Image (tube, rainbow, N blue to C red; front, side, top):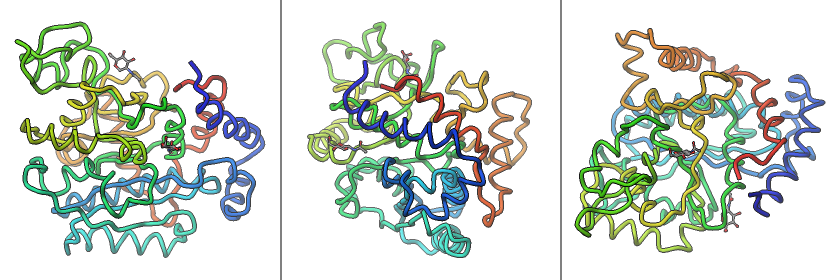
Length: 369
Ligand SMILES: *[C@@H]1O[C@H](CO)[C@@H](O)[C@H](O)[C@H]1NC(C)=O
Ligand SMILES: *[C@@H]1O[C@H](CO)[C@@H](O)[C@H](O)[C@H]1NC(C)=O
């Protein structure tokens, strides 16, 4: 069903876009980008795309975050005349992250003039009481508390991404999915897996549940237990968050209740548990969080790849000795190398045509609604 929000938010913008995109060549886009602030196009698109990323502890995580941000800026280039990009780096203020991430990033952004459409904001990680921390270090549970982080008080919404993701499409297209949310939806996340008989949640948590066709329906013997969303659970490595709606609800207090009642191993488990209790999540198309084991059916159409997520240190294993016979892994390897080798002075999208084609395809129907 087409919601009113969808029609208003999406169509006006999209219709303008088709017309614009049909007549724009890449050269013109370049020109458009240069005079970004004064074009009519920027008037019809969201004024800002906000992405938050966390970086704490080891140099490795800082380096990963730098690569993620490089891919974000590269893919933002074709949309840069249409929206401004804000990247918030939530970090531990350590010397090591400063050296490998913050300093080089600020240098590149200024030196090559990306600051004309990209703003980098540094946000100190909040101190959390012990009972609200999950294993895996200081950064791991930060995203659960963005809605109450004083540095985000003025922010309406953001997209959180893990540091092991690479963008292969414009963040503007992902941001657009906010306009597909129903009034009750506060988050957007993709399925943990798509099909098959297993999956992390079904294998691990199903012993606590009464079997049912929707996955985690009820806990055994009427007891309370950890649950997960839908048939396979959701992955929180890419998460759209409408902070305004989260703040207006009791979601943050429910996080505290859940975390003090159960011992969770990761923030993703907390989200899944809460979404199973109350469904306020919009399930993202799987192309926005492709993992080697997510069974996302993208192979048919390479242009549709949105975000590659190299979870379980996949990108590092690919740099090492992992052999890449597997078709899907080859894609991860190729794009990881491409983005690593891209020069900061020439950041650009994987393919400009992909941006235009997606816009054109999405105009036929408001698919995500
Ligand atoms: C978030 O929700 C608020 C309140 O419903 C709404 O006004 C706002 O437009 C939403 N933000 C986005 C990016 O969709
Ligand atoms: C997510 O998984 C469920 C259960 O398998 C499926 O019905 C649904 O279509 C999937 N959603 C998307 C957007 O892929």
